[in-house]
Length: 348
Image (cartoon, rainbow, N blue to C red):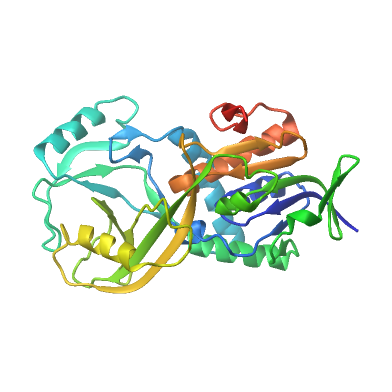
């Protein structure tokens, strides 16, 4: 029987972030992934410390970025890939009131270093923006598709990735260890995204599903080198390709693309984009979200070596490394979890 320190289920942003913690501590592990959850792959991958709808600071954004960006840089060097693209974010203003709210927010000490106090005038004929833009500083994009595919290749080369569905009924507990088929492990971490809903050990947690759809357009006249945030975001990918996103659907539980999602994005886009373009791709995935907008991290109430790492929501590239370190330090060093992410906060 093969013995490891950890079995992990799910190789999305959360699972990868936890792998990095284990590798740094020289812990052995195997990770199961069946590619059923697409939220990490279809994510825009933007890291941005400001909630642009309300001009407020993202929860623990400084701590998240201080931890996440060096980790992504380390992955780039280790795997010899490019995943971190520094790119500014421009918030399109639709009124003088929004401009004034921006100025007020930029005077806030918590936001001053992230919000430029200068209004940028629009000179792009392909964009309708009479009131200009506000620039968010210290932003960028993680190419989640390249990250996940290259990381899986790295894990396969090290014989650490098992590409198959995890059968919960075959997991057994005995004398403080866990066994699954021919594997024995000290600990188990479930980070399977929306797949948690079918996990008999943690499906009692209040994970909500939010389906997101994303378009890719070809727009040779647009020529922007920044992320534009309005009723939808436009994220440049190079070669005149742009991501357009994203939708929020709380009823559809499938990864299937829809005509309704496409039309919603296009209708919003056409309110401010004036150039011609062509839709070249559409993808969909289920975001694992929580009602209080905080992740789900903690221990099973009966099995003290089973853990959950889930519910990253829409800001997974920022929060993933932060919660992964929280969980690792909790398991290996006995440090208390942040109460805002601990699953015990629900009293279930």
